[in-house]
Length: 179
Length: 128
Image 1 (cartoon, rainbow over the protein chains, first blue to last red):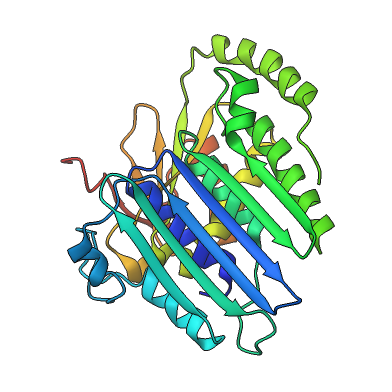
Image 2: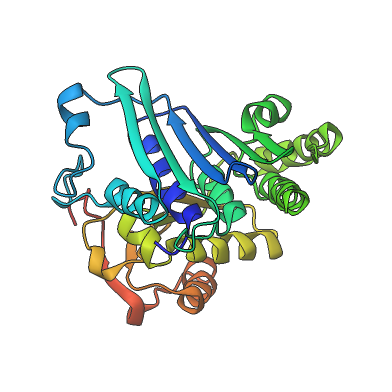
């Protein structure tokens, strides 16, 4: 993976495969403490403690189309390269939370990448799922909550091209203000 | 922090409800971009971006864009599946931005399969 936004997309897609109806992506960039923290939380079916123990093993996957699962192990590797770590909390029936930390200024820390594309891909590709994207950088912040948009839209789906355009402009503007 | 305007959403709701009634909520074509770890690492998100931009640019109403997981042929990612109403689904392999534009133009809009980029006709979940 070239950047963190692709890792985030990958983990969020896992949540969707686990049947989540709500996925939260929280990014906190604290330049003062030099910490970058990413949390991806879903309310999908969760994992048993036995599965959780081996979830970071690349030879473990829920997939039936192939026998190797690399997503979380690759993200863990990216975190560790930047003096950070990745942890997974999960319980059956409740959901899963993946927390990743990194040293913000570490020379090997991957760039954030195109978070707007990641969020739009998730919303457009999975209109039945709600997404919360909260990005904080020091004292500035951006928040997108598709539940609020859905209420206003009634029967119009979130992947309607007009709606996607509105969300696209909003995310782009929000992220511009952060940087 | 920019807020999404409620007025904008209300306007879209009004405009789009009429259009949905017109086509009876039916889509003419569905494009699925496979978004497993393999697909994402190989550039599936960029392919998705091309489709999103084209749909917005041409104001297309009857094509739905969606995601799915790994299709099992990780070495051939990015992969997409195009389903046009009343014809068999077609899987395309090693899709990049340029191929995505061509597939959209010729197959999704024009109804003609781009055989050079196709893997096979049919779906792994369906007997052909």
